[in-house]
Image 1 (cartoon, each protein chain N blue to C red):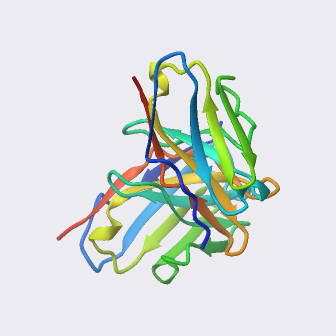
Image 2 (tube, rainbow over the protein chains, first blue to last red):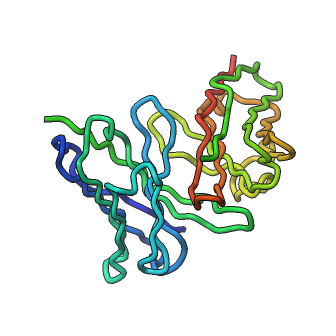
Length: 120
Length: 108
């Protein structure tokens, strides 16, 4: 059973860059799609983007200008960087594995989530 | 961009059947997936590919999808089913993954 674990600072200052890492155990990041998803307090889920095939990426158009997802296969983890953050980026950030099926993929494994607060 | 519409809340008595809908333009042509999220926890996949259940998910959970509406049905509802439920699809026109706004299921 694959397990995912998010890590990174819980507090980021406005205008700075949010950086998170998702460490994968029980499976290889060289297979499947790996996504970041966030959830502002008391609100719904928002897909941020994915990485697959050790480098190909796709981002939510609403965040694309500020987001970079990368992968380190030697450490079996993938990372999220989001620049120019504001209070609106305060959220629980999840990493998840996506399984592709005809008509679209689903997220079968999720990390526990990590709360990132943007505040000075 | 593709929009999924869910009712904010659904209430049901224990032992009865809960139905949570997810509306979208021609959603019947897409694969719909459903997640259960309890307070303070990560989402858990309960239905994928419209109606398939992952291992470990009770048979009480089922799904259907046709036309402009997908439905998650929970039979013989238990107190432990109280949670937020989200539907999700792939928007092929933009290659985005889209979530519905979520439905809070309350067990009376």
